[in-house]
Length: 300
Image 1 (spheres, rainbow, N blue to C red):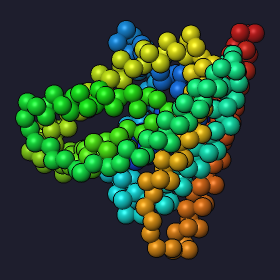
Image 2 (image 1 turned 90 degrees about the vertical axis):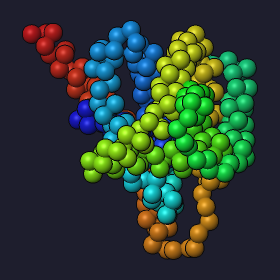
Image 3 (image 1 turned 135 degrees about the horizontal axis):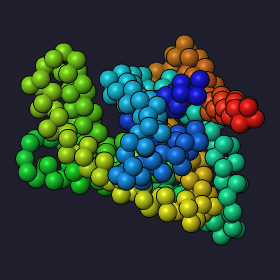
């Protein structure tokens, strides 16, 4: 069961990193895998096989989530965003108490609450960056270096809760173009159209490699902060998480009122609201079983 829970958690984190206005880092904190993922990314170059073995089922879940998001979820979000938006709103709002509990475990000083205000304000301001006109990506030396730099610059948003890289990509005018390239790459592979798959890969690879480089660099900074200033860091994360629903609602487009869609969306909100606690209970139950099993083996 614990492996299944790890895949499910990774699945939602993967989707969140692709969906506009939703932060994968926020979901990682809510699902209580943030520290594990940061430590894993930080140790990847030193102990790659150990890290992959430890995070294997999370990685599988993230991989599935990213593919589903690129191929299906993004299309659903563009055509009727209300249901999927309400699911993630429920997930985030339902998970805020879990983040607060994690913050309380750390040593928090009164001055740390200033970082809560800074983080909250930063996320509230972020949506007003606006959306730039969509850019066309062509293969050139300039675009290779620019896309690598853009990926490296946006990489912290993969790890920092509450900050959506998708929103920043929209503001630069590259979100729809890159999603289209990733979608073309996956669909071309499935249909064995290697010509289009190769073209899409070459155009989008610099951005992907920039993300990987930036994530490896950023993880070291975050690990240092979690080790040496855990209380301050988690208060900052709490501010990001509490403010996270605002950019999601801000980017939700208005559309005609349809009762069935609203009912379905509210049902998904309730499902999302209770899911973090449910997954946490499953995880705790499995940890207790593993502890009991190890205790029995030691006594024998």
